Length: 146
Image (cartoon, rainbow, N blue to C red; front, side, top):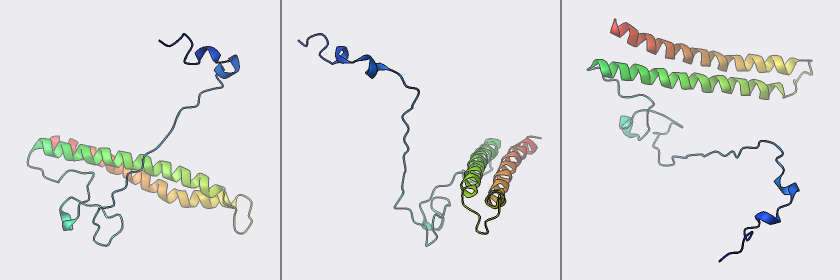
């Protein structure tokens, strides 16, 4: 049988057991779908079976034969656009921070920050539009119920 302390627990010194702060383990996963048919258009989405492609859509089929299908479709649109609005807003902030670090080509003081704001503003407007689409999808179902 193993002796007490055989796992090395008693051999640790106090220097090895100090806690120097919180450092979580982080990782990420990248999924690549190499078999996706796009009919010559890069990253083309669409419904499965449409144009012979095998892409997946974020939205269900637009079939409105029952109130439940209308509700499900509006909820799917709202959820997808809310997620898209969040991702676009984050992208705009990251773009603004990244472009602010690039030196201004004309050497103007603060020129890189102004350029970063102007460029990221367009992406921010896209995020606002996606949020409006999510709100309108919810309003669509509310109008349908009335």
